Each structure stands twice: as C-alpha cells, then as structure tokens.
Length: 238
Ligand SMILES: [Zn+2]
Image 1 (tube, protein in one colour):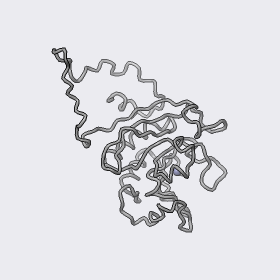
Image 2 (cartoon, rainbow, N blue to C red):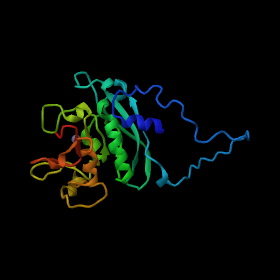
Image 3 (cartoon, rainbow, N blue to C red):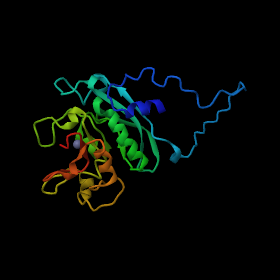
Image 4 (tube, helix red, strand yellow):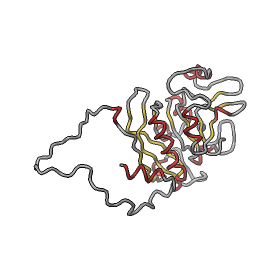
C-alpha cells in the first residue's frame, strides 16, 4: 500500500510508469516457523489508527455509463478512479471512497485528500455520480462528494470543469451552491447559505480545506462573486 500511495503522490498521471521502482521491498513481518500461522491482524484495531490509503485505477466507458458519453471533452482513458480512505461524519475511517477524476490531476488530488484525512475533515459520502445515474441533483441531495461528470456548468451551455474531471464538489449539503439572490436548490441544505454555520464539514474562507486545495493550485467557488459554489474546487478556479 505504501508503494501505491507514494507513486500516486508524484502526480505524473500516467499511472503505469513506475515499473521496477522499489521492487525489492522486504516483507514487514517474516513468516513464522509454526505451520499454523497465528493471525495477528486484529479486525478490531482502533479505527483512529487506520492510515490513509489510496489507489489510482483506470476506468473504461462501461464504468461511466451515465456520466460519460461520446462528445465529452475527455475520453475514459484520460480519467482515473481514486479508491481511498476518507474520514466520515461518524468520526470513523471509511475505506471505500471512490472519486473519478482527470488522470493528470489524480496524484495531486490524492495529496489533497490525504491532507483532509489527516486533519480529520469529515466527508459524508464519496461515490461516483454513476450511482445516481449521472444526476447532479440526486448526488447533491444525498450529500455526496464527487468529481467527474460530463455535464454543463450550472446555468450555462458550456462544459463544467467537472466534465474534464478537474473539479471536486465537497460535502454538497453543508456547502451548497448559493444563487446570487440567496436561493439554495436543496431545501434541507438551505440553512447552509449562512456561512457562519460551524457544523462539521462546512468550509470557510482561508481554512485548512481551502488551503489544501490551494496547495495544488486549485481555486474555490466560495470566492466567486454573484452566485457562490461553496462545495466546488477546480484546477482553473471556475
Ligand atoms: Zn462543482
């Protein structure tokens, strides 16, 4: 697992260029002499001791049945699935986070999400939008954190940065898209238009979450003028 994470952290985006690197890793625990191995791995290990893990995997069109189609600006070969640990709202590690992103950004995003995990920033859920049949509304309504979705920007006829896999929507309920007139499309999340709210997961200007994304050069939609998109981080800030 260490090898995977360190390879990911280089951010090269090729995903398969590390052949032979540190190929002679010695096993951490040599096999014991007794034939009946004593299983020392404790399934009941303290959750807080679980380290962040991430794997960057290739995806195919069949994995993106609802979120990708012909005419999208990036082919499935230019996308990756990050499978990673995230810290939950239940204050426990979750090993099954899935985030589909642009291959070029995958390594950088692993760096960001490792930081979020280490600071115990809680994330409600992390599933590809295909679980919601590509519906941005349904994904947000579920409080889902996601990235790639080949769709237009809200209220626009041009591709969103999500269509390139170069934008992440983080804790979509606690950090809603707030129209210029203050409207929030998701009723249960309307209270989060008030950004003085300190509930877990709420992102504030200049906080550690914003800084984690800024460390890879990504901008925050909470800094837009007019409509503000508090859940939205992207490589070009749009
Ligand atoms: Zn977004």
